[in-house]
Length: 40
Image (cartoon, rainbow, N blue to C red; front, side):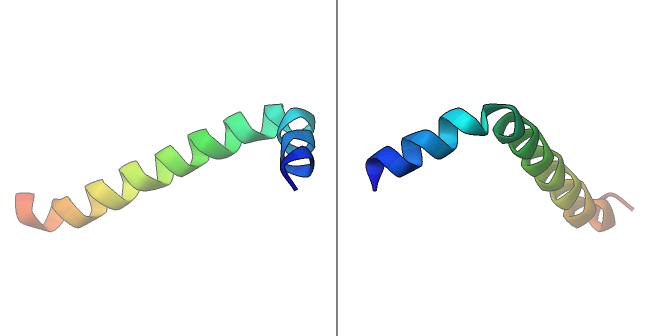
């Protein structure tokens, strides 16, 4: 199981970075969207 996870991580290293950036962008948009009504 650990060997399979290690293989997946090493084979998809490029997309992992893109997925992490996409997740961070979604969290920022969620935070802005939830705090926007309080600013108005």
